[in-house]
Image 1 (cartoon, rainbow, N blue to C red):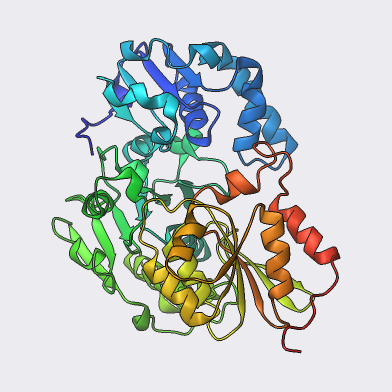
Image 2 (cartoon, one colour):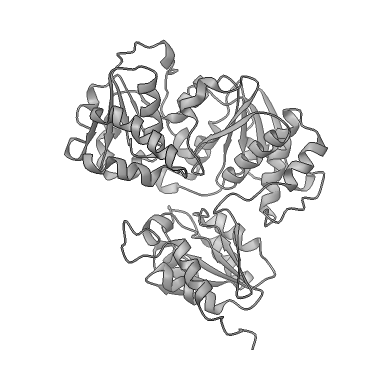
Length: 464
């Protein structure tokens, strides 16, 4: 991690030379849009695509459902698109900048290798959120569960009559950076914070920091597991109230240096949660974390209980798609690590599960995942990939397929009535590589696969 001076952007001269990388992505676009709206006159954007593809790529990346929202976005983008260096001009002149904003994913692109040696302060969108928010900030990180926990916390706050916004590593809606100065000073900004955000080094820490758990993940992006743990722990500063998982070996040791430390344990949630959206014991971990935060901000147990029961699952996090021919279909496409998919399988322990998976291992040991699959008797159907190879080497019996469509159809046919068809990659880049028509014209989207299964003949009952 890099040591950064506080950004203090609001005190800088408006002609500061600022460069923003990745302006067709959610984070880069939001930062560029914000800086231009704030009146900074010397801002340069960068994108890999050609100039005439900027708007198309932007609309593909930013989640906006209403046509009027898309129209307003494009109007703003067209006002600053002449400042963007794209295609062959990508990154030209960036070494002359006073400071640079990068998206959290910048290291994943080979075209950004020159940025590794850049002698310019590098920031990301999280620095702006934490330094400029006029309200209490709640940061949530962890190897698994951070998205659900972030959404749970915001839901509890809103249900309890508090003002709460969600942003950060968030794909279910637009970023709130453009409205940062208008947020209710008595409210809350709940930020999902990834290890990639933290790897920059924070200039200011959240008022409340939640670490759901730390297990092996993203090891190809860190020198060691210990370095990854340290990155996660860096969310906590001397001004931070830390909310930590007492049952996780790594997080239980993270409280040193915090203003206060509060531990959570899933067995200590003081009420049963009757919510069909929260499959699996691991979700009790997320509930317990959110419960502690709710207590810290003054919500009563009655308020929390009612709010938990009305929570709706986050898309792609053990999301119930429905029943197809008597088979329960679960969308856990955001389960891109071995541990998150292992937990997903255990959420349906005792029922026959057919798993559709595949992707990159991110340098993680798959032994625990493989042991769980063998012990649970999971029927595994994988798109041929690094992850499927790792499981096969560890003795997992699985079927490998060339496409997600083939893996899905085969898995569905092997799922007995009252069984579970679970889409959970257990590896990185499953959606972008195997369900993305832009990269693979012959691919089917997840929605198309579900439609195909709905229109298919019912599988022959495997119990017969």
